[in-house]
Length: 106
Image 1 (spheres, rainbow, N blue to C red):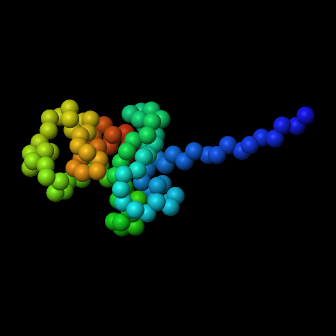
Image 2 (image 1 turned 90 degrees about the vertical axis):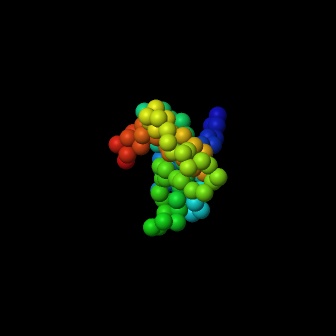
Image 3 (image 1 turned 30 degrees about the vertical axis):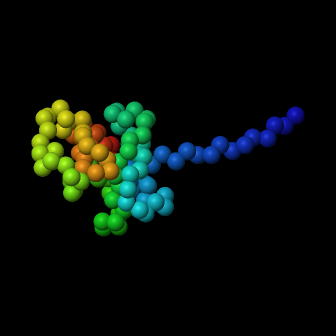
């Protein structure tokens, strides 16, 4: 007896905002990416992707804006800067640890 096989749908796991852009998403906003580094260990991370500046595809590591936060919001200690802080849809810093691992694996 021959049993037909159903092709498995490939799961889309973009590594960064550039891959998100190349897969047809051209609006700036929050997207899930799967960076290949020791911090994420195969898990996704929500990042803000800038799809407008210089042809788009930029993974934003820091954003400051007029979101009604204290001017002192970015005055944080070392540990907080290492690990990241803020709201990904408003003011945020992704973290030194993320940046080091992310860019070493690019």
